[in-house]
Length: 275
Image (tube, rainbow, N blue to C red; front, side, top):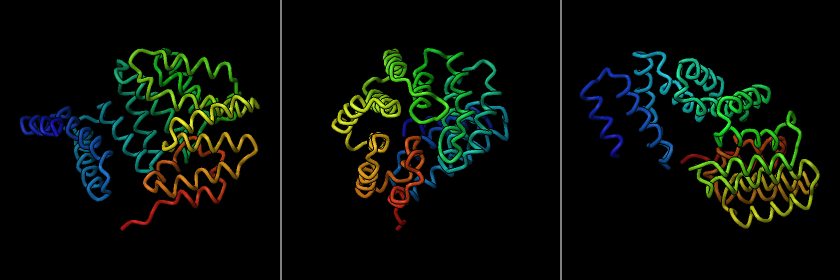
């Protein structure tokens, strides 16, 4: 609320100021992602879109507005538009002020369902490693590729090294990152045939974060890679029934790749009916 009121004052003072409009639009968009009521969230998001559209009419090469628009497009299921605007943000960011943030989005939008363009994703991840080697998003994208992509050979030693280098960065939120990264290493173990190590990570992950959708998806993948696909499917089906609000997010997860053709999984992840 404080952010919105400050942005509102800035717009009242200068109604045609692109930066003031961007601040209000970006704050409204961030707020919309936390609103549980879909009707209210949609109305707030529409207001954010209107502000960002004005920004881009006034300043077509505003990198922050372009990047925020790309995030909105991705969240609303328009991946090609998301990539187009993220590319425009990258080209407009002459001094790389947004730098690794743009690279991260271009990796994510290409790697994520429905595009799953591993070639482009790997190119952006490699670019990030060259230009922003110390950023945790760059080291983690290398681990994501190793866990999910056939283009990357599963290397458990390298995977554990990537996990440690990501967690050792200053101020990167180790407590929040560690459970997910540990499960990614578990997927790499399973892909490499290190069954005992994969099971150890599986047990640790489910004990630590049993209510986290990404943990459940990665645990299901580990089970499938270990030849226990039915157990993995049952894990997702049970979780989706208990957490219907997570289904849309789960359908877009990187980790659903190996199970996306499994009818029982996709049926379980159908969005709940509205109303």
